[in-house]
Amino acid sequence: MRTLMNEMPKPHRKLLAYNKIYYEMNKRYGFKTANEWLKKEWSRALYLHDADTATFKPYCYAYTLKRLAEEGLFFLNSFNNEPAQHLTTFIDFVKEFVSYNSNLTSGACGLPDLVPYMYYFWKKDVESGYYTVTPEKYARQNIQRFIYAVNQPAVRDSIQSAFTNVNFFDMPYLEALFGGSEFPDGSPMFYELEGIMEFQKMFLEVMSDIRSKNMFTFPVSSISMIYKDHKFEDEE
View (spheres, rainbow, N blue to C red):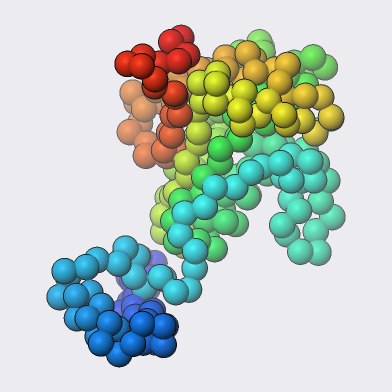
């Protein structure tokens, strides 16, 4: 029933979206061009993806979690936000962040720096003795918590899982993207790149393990590696 209610207004929204595009094309490129576009769109010579939200909401977006790690739930108005102190709390904050943004966009919520910040809070908890059983088990439990959360079927528009994307990098990419960055406590990320790399591997292992039992879709994995002169720069 919830899916039916969500689908029913789409034809109306689609007409409104097309009207806006037609109006802008006519204004910028002229009546003939606007008509050509509309005719091709209507006959399916062209296909506008998620047409019903095309002029209402942005599509896919990659968000840094820097402010979330440093300030907590900063995006909620009239909320006395404070930064997370532990990995468990940070994962809860990420879940809220993904849910919030998934309902304001029609595409995916990309989290390119999720793993470095998860690693930071995990390392803090391990150093202070705040973990269950072993450091590795504690890490794996929280990776599982995140994966199961983003695959819940009612996070987005009350009918879908959250479209999420998590990035994994080889060492040259890690150095280029995070080598000059700092963790919330001011410590340089550069000195922890090896640890982040190992955490990435653990994340992929946990995801693979879960998918051997549950064929979850999310998070989609974007793996960035430099391939040069017929080989990977970071072979490992």
